Image (cartoon, rainbow, N blue to C red; front, side, top):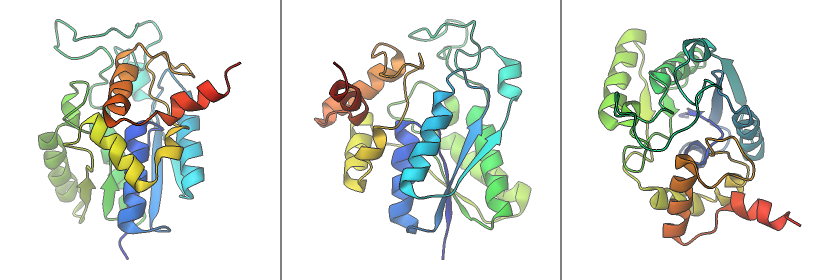
Length: 227
């Protein structure tokens, strides 16, 4: 029986991919891995743990503190404020963490190798994304080949959301029965719960739910508990 390892960040997209993997590979054949890379918002780790627990999948957290030591990104450096738009010098958002997905997927592949898992699932997308070059299909295809050659191992990287808009991803989550789990996810670049609603990640998430015509379970959760 094929088994899969899902890279689970605790966010909307990776949670949707977790439920995609459960549908594709079956309950009992899916595990999740989360990376503690020194991200400024530790709530991501707690969200990933809750999502994995609710889905009933084994969950591993691997520490990778080098990104925090490197700094230079608003997602790892507390002294850098998240800014909308692109950096004039790099033409990338200041939330870009260079090499993050490459490193994550390499470690995920190594873990998959150790567990005799041949499928790794990640929620990257090049349609509605933040301009990160390591979310593009060409990057993932090249990395898949490098991992296969470098480990001499039959490994497939699955990217179910690669060409989906955020609205299409929301509809996919609905069809997979993942909407309740999205109430426990975290997207906000400011690390706020309820989400700030103003940072680029919040704006993109809200746009997707609005275009899909579906209330965001995370927003609804806090609205229900507000005085």
